[in-house]
Length: 157
Length: 157
DNA sequence: TTTATCGCAGACCATTTTAGTCTGTAATCA
DNA sequence: TGATTACAGACTAAAATGGTCTGCGATAAA
Ligand code: SF4
Ligand code: SF4
Image (cartoon, rainbow over all chains, first blue to last red; front, top):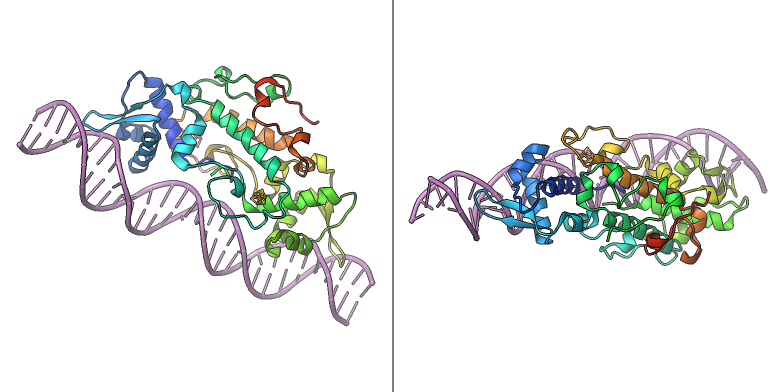
């Protein structure tokens, strides 16, 4: 529960790799899969979703593969997450799936939970794949817990 | 993905109810389940876990039930989550389950993801069940996204 | 123009997690 | 004594996840 899927993990690994290569650099599924010991077929699917969402660009040809379509700084973890797994929500009532919750009529905790969710989404949006490969000290979108107590956060945008 | 389970949802509903009653108030599973249309047996299990974790106190007798064991302010959503579902982690490598990830050897995104996880956990810890039943304006542990940009957060402790 | 290399698409299956059910035991008090 | 409550755990059903298999389409090098 509350865990990222393996597909998202794969997507982040691949994108991080491409972000480091970058400037038009092209990587193909087979190489990435081999490097990280990821089942090639499943990584292929993931890449296709990233492509459909406009995060990466496909080059279907020999020596082809994928390249970033937008700058690494603009690819947030949240974007990747949504591209690979669809809309995100920490409670059943607030993601895409509209199956009305049995408890909704009596529920008086929805509003605070949605705020909580917004905070989480905000952090996911604030972290870009550019920052993924960097050491913690360099991170801007994400801080360690302690700094939250006294210091304001600054959005990278 | 990244979603709270129904059991946690049930636990939060029940605890919120008990927090509002409170001061030694006793609620029993049958009543709570009826109020929220929760399957009684499953709510019973959830309450037992909360009891084992020391968040609530059981009174096994006619007219018995459960009461809060510690103040509502000290029962964080994270505590509830851990009580009901066990250790929390957004990636496979950092929760309780030690099944070594295939990608771990080559993984260079672990550290930032753990920071991200810490932030999420911090938010879950900062939100108490006391605040659950209150209107968003009153919330201290959770803010809307916008306030994160300029305002420091203040922990309730 | 052939052909190997790449991505595209979707059906399919296995495993794990989640949700819910069923049955029975133990404690307490009126 | 017996109604009422919690406690415990096996069990099943459904859904999400992770992974596999097969075939097609695009492209550029040979
Ligand atoms: S119980 Fe409330 S918060 Fe949970 S899914 Fe239902 S409506 Fe949403
Ligand atoms: S790929 Fe990296 S971050 Fe993801 S589970 Fe494995 S070690 Fe952890």
